[in-house]
Image (cartoon, rainbow, N blue to C red; front, side):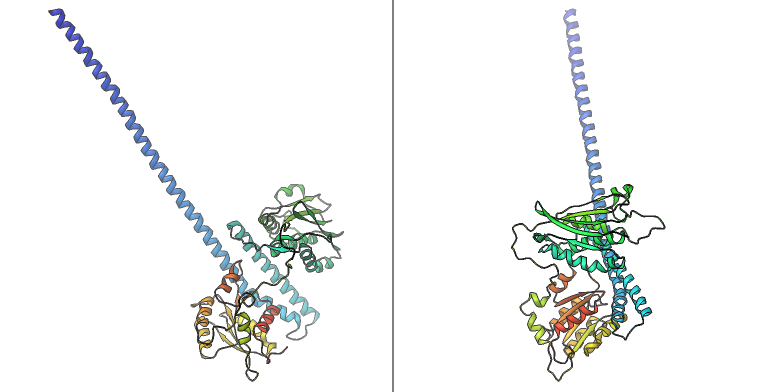
Length: 454
């Protein structure tokens, strides 16, 4: 009996130990599970925090890009505004509109105009680079006669070569196929490459050639200048890089031209490269896609941009409505808040013998049109209070003014600004700095009156 009792005790102890062991295993597993859940929870919290941080950084980057674009656009406007008077008046002086100049005075004016144009080019380069980096650069692809474009660009740069007694030769085949590209951007690339070749060549020749090759047209710009040092060749297409960065460098520049040319070429589906030996010149080559399968008609590279009069069916009626009776003077309303620019426009239009009425704010322009409809409105876009676009819309809604021609005069010269202003109701667009000839032609086009001097 005692043995049986002892066996039962041992059995109970074994069962109890086994139960406690199983409980321990379960508790350990539960602890591990709880720890894993806590660890997973901490990981989820950490990942969510990282995601919020990345989202916040992304918003900051987007805001920085927006602020940079706004800053550059504003700076472009603020610099173009004084350049408008500087360049327009210097061109008028050089043309002799204010009387004959002495040789010394003419040299002064040429220096002013040349440096103003250099500053304008710098502004345009910075704007282009900013738009390219932000992915906002829009291309106007057309079927273009590339041979004609090359000849035109070379002709524009020929005076620079002639000033150095440097031959500038263009060698093109007669059967060069048309290309699909943005003609203004190709002209910009050509201007940069040919201009650099002339600038860095003291003797010898600058040669521009092209040939068709496997769906593209290959353009070469070759010079016999000093070439590019081997140590600089791997960085030649970088922004702001210049091969000669010493304090005594002989040639001015910002180092943006080749970087922009490289990016523009690639945006149009082409490529750019170069070969150079220091002391023996350089050869830059870029490709432009052929207009395969496109209509045979080729759009000329210098075709003028369409204005609202060419686009809309009512455009000719507006120009015709602007012609007053022969016994009434032609009236032009100039809306401009900058007095220097207002003076410049007055001086440009003075030979046309027009009646000039002015307003420095949009609301005043609307009221003038309400009381006495002019024949043409030249409207600045960035005005205090009511903007130029808002004023244009308000003028359009006045009785008898729906067909009144409105030409935008603006320092807002970024790609898309022109289209936006035409879509908002302007009939034509002239970017500042204003070219006196362009403004005069626009006024003649929109006012077809008999009282205007030919």
